[in-house]
Image 1 (cartoon, rainbow, N blue to C red):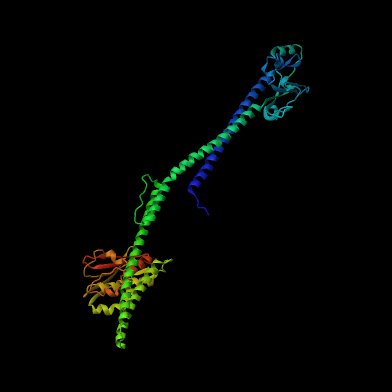
Image 2: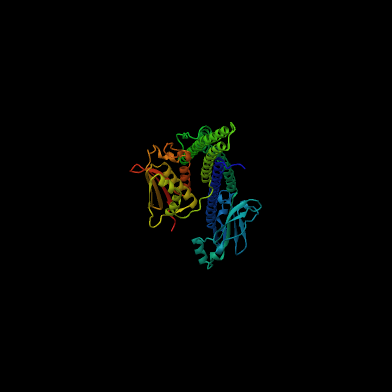
Amino acid sequence: MNNPSIRRSLLLRTGIGVGLLLCILSAVTYLLVRRGLYQQLDNSIQQTAALLANQVELEDGHITFEWSEGIGTNPLATDEGLFQYWNETTGQTTRSPALGGGDLPKFRGPNGTPELRDIHMPGRRRHARALGMVVYPFVLPEEQERMAAENRVLDPKSMPHVLVVARDAKPVHRILTRLRWILGAGTLGTLVIGYLLIERAVRVSLKPIDQLARRIRRRTARNFGEGIKLPGKLPEELVGVAEDFDSLLTRVAATRNRERDFIRHAAHELRTPIAGLQATTELALSKPRDAAGYAAHLETCRKTSAELAALVKRLSALARIDARTSAPEPSTVDLSALTAECLKPFRTTIEAREIRLESETPDPPPLASADPTLARVVINNLLDNAVSYGAFPGVLRIRFRRQGENIVMAVANPVDGFPDDPGRLFEPLFRRDESRHDSGTHLGIGLTLSQEAAEAMHGSLKVRKTRAGWIEFQLSLPVPPP
């Protein structure tokens, strides 16, 4: 399936939007021009109808039409004049010369008021605009006096006429047809030119994305650790993405370096006991021995294999924490009670090394929201680290306190020389090789495992130097919800 393209999407959406806008503008322009032309035509018809309505006269008892006088010179009576009268009293009709023998449709508005409508030209397949109305003859003052003297008074309203005036709409239709072609061609041409301009604008606007993608590919192919050299005029919409991606690649590079160091240290740690196991086995088989001799070599092999088993167990535990796909199941854990249980196996060593234990029993008990198994792993490693690497005779101090929405467990003890970089204590397979400590039985994974476990429980594990020069580990875990 083809991946969606921003360029195609922008071109398509912008093209559709511009096309719709042009169609709407063309339609509005056409309708406005059409309305204006028809308004102009209707005004002309109304003016002609007003002139013709005043040219119906009552003279000597007969109806006369002034427009018929001087037909050759009167513009109303030329071939362009289309009008017709109907005498409602006698039924007689009078046409303009341009109509020939044809008749216009007879109509009028309600109560004789003027009414405009579209009609068909008589004998022609063309449209026209027409106005129908009722008109009354005009009586001159002299004619009124003469009819009064003869005792013969006629009311003009008794002789109504229907007047229909028409005007051919072909010129308007011709103009509108030409306008449709112009608007259609203009819209199509504008779309073509607009597409080219939009395509260029989109290509130029998206050019920084292509440049950024090429630089990211070059960095990915060469080295994760190198920073992305951002283009000088990178759009502000891409700055955050580029910086976040650069930060992500930096974290990936750090993770890869950490994994590489972990593998190198693990290989080094495994090589030593494996070499010792192989050497002890070869030595045992180098010559015939009695049962006691073989037993001594086997005991050495057993100790080496136990060391290997402990190393593999710790590595597996660390891998399981890193590979968790779901969050640990939190429950309410009493850290004070759990610490008391974890201290039991260390009592003998604490007494043998003359370590004074300062552990408090707080009230109320320090309750934390944590996974009991992971919490036990962290506490065991902290106690093991304090007992094994602390100065003895010495002190092991355990304190609990509430800090905001967290419970903090502090494990502190004096040491022979504070490490220059305390953060390295959390690196996998890092060990402080000092002769007076039993560091040979420690694999350098416990604190790494503890820190990963604390973070998996939404907590943290940190180390600091106290005012007295002691080393103090601080385990912070969230308080259970109320």
